[in-house]
Image 1 (cartoon, rainbow, N blue to C red):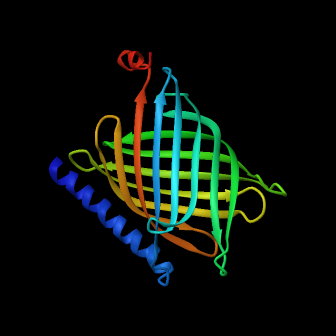
Image 2: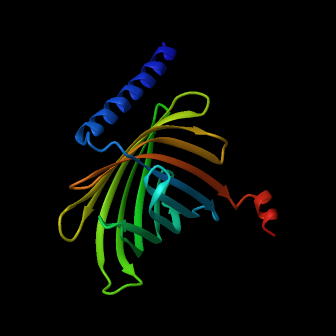
Length: 237
């Protein structure tokens, strides 16, 4: 009975991912060019309740070609409870935009952010809620532009077998100034826990704006380091 329930749940997750992907493609059938979204993120635990996160992203408009932006974020996280966390910090973004005359313009931004994450589990499945406030400002140019936005992400992860898992999330971005809708991001894919410290996932990533929608292949590698362990402390002496 448990065996049948396990695989019925897996099949249900897989069918949902296929249907969701097809519906997203149907919205813009003329857009068949895939971009790429490469993400490396890690967390270093430095205290029982404190850790340092770091995230790096490289985005290309075409698969590993036509540079879009590079993004780096870090800060400090505080464990407010067994399943909740507060994080604050800063981020830097370098992006390139292309005009019809093949002119490339380069911009840089500084972000300040604060976020709250709440995790929950049921029957080995996990659901994560994350709400983030961002203050973004252009740097290195005149005049300086500043805008604020709020983003909410709902993420679902279901284990499959032998370290493999199904993963999906939806993240809505709302602007505080101007038009309320900023963008929406959807991911559907699969991953594997490579070891206790490292996991990787890959899948379809849709980046939707009010007047456009980008289809991408998203590859993510995540790692965690516990610097509070005695053996790690000896390595850093």
